[in-house]
Length: 224
Image (cartoon, rainbow, N blue to C red; front, top):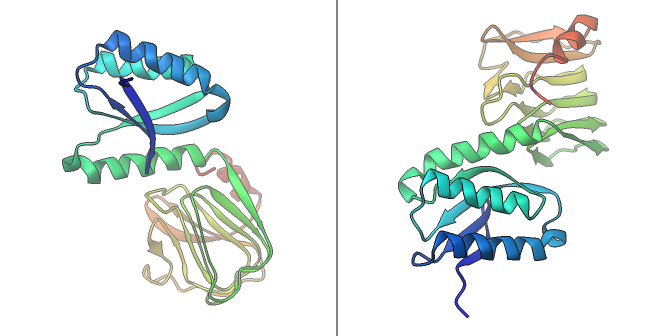
C-alpha cells in the first residue's frame, strides 16, 4: 500500500517525505494515525522537522506541525529547509535552536579531565575535578571547573556571548568565550588563588574574581 507520508530520521532530527500527489487531508490523516500509534515510541522529545517531496504553503506546514503535536508529545522546534542552496543558513539555524534548548539544562562530569582528553558538549557543564594541561573542554554554554583549570576551555561556542568559564583555581590563559581567548585579547593573566571567571562584558573579554556580585549577575545571564 502506498504511503502518503514516510517518517525517517535525519541529521537534524526527523524528516517526513510526502507523496507529491497526495491530498493534504490524506497526509494529515495518515500522520495522525502514525504518531498516535507510535506515541510511546517517540516519548517526550524536542526536535527539528524537515518536510520534503511536496511543495507546501505556510498554512499546510503549520497543519502538519499541529497534527504531530496533537497526536504525540513531540515538540517541533522549527522547520528545516531541505533546499541544498540554504544548507549553510539551515545549519546555523539548527545550531542556534539546539543551543537555545540545551541552555535550559546542564550536565555534570565527575572526575578530572586528563591530558589528551577532549569533552565537547552542547549544554553547560560542571567539571567536578581538575582540567589538566593538554586537556580540552568545550561547550555552547558555561564551563565550570570545581578544581584546578590548567588546560583548555572553550565556552560559548556557536555564538553564545553570555556564557562564562570558571575555574576554582585557574592557572592558564587558554580560555575563550565564543572564540575570543585571553591570549589573543592581550590580557595579562595572573594565577589566582581565588575562584576566577572569564566572561564578555560590554563587548570585551574580562577576568573577574568570583564574589557575590558575580553570582547575582550570572543569575540574569541567558547562559544556562
